[in-house]
Image (cartoon, rainbow, N blue to C red; front, side):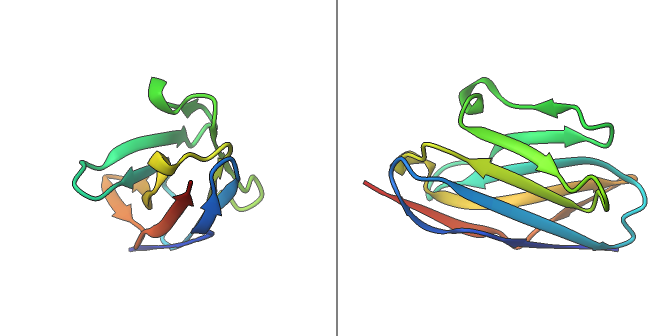
Length: 116
């Protein structure tokens, strides 16, 4: 079992920045992929960024430029999402997702609200 705990969400003005964290604990020795998703009210959950266990990153075209995924390279159990030049449309609940072996785990979500 893997537990994911997110932090770093909050209220920020448009143009501001936030950094989200997601710390994994438990059976983390087989983390294959780490992802950040977000979901706005009335919308489907969408992928924001991903990182493989080798450190390769992936961003959907719509997320390139303002979001950056990274990890703690010492423990490799914590993943971050740096969000810059935030816009009101970035308001959402942000979730981290870890693929560990054949299993998939989700964090509880952290609310990000961007005011105009």
